[in-house]
Image 1: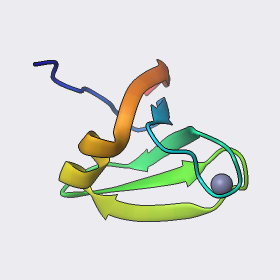
Image 2: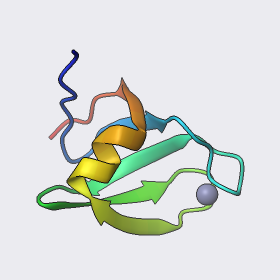
Image 3: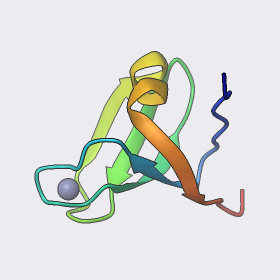
Length: 65
Ligand SMILES: [Zn+2]
């Protein structure tokens, strides 16, 4: 099974699209909870790391740190 690695600044693709239609999110903060911002509507949400890893598909574009 693939281990998902991500860091602050990464652009990630989620399995399900946000209501605004975008599947791309930017990682703003990591930890026990992960804060991500929708690139479509700029809405940010905080979800648990476990839930994030389940709903995230892949890193589309790595951030620069
Ligand atoms: Zn959105």
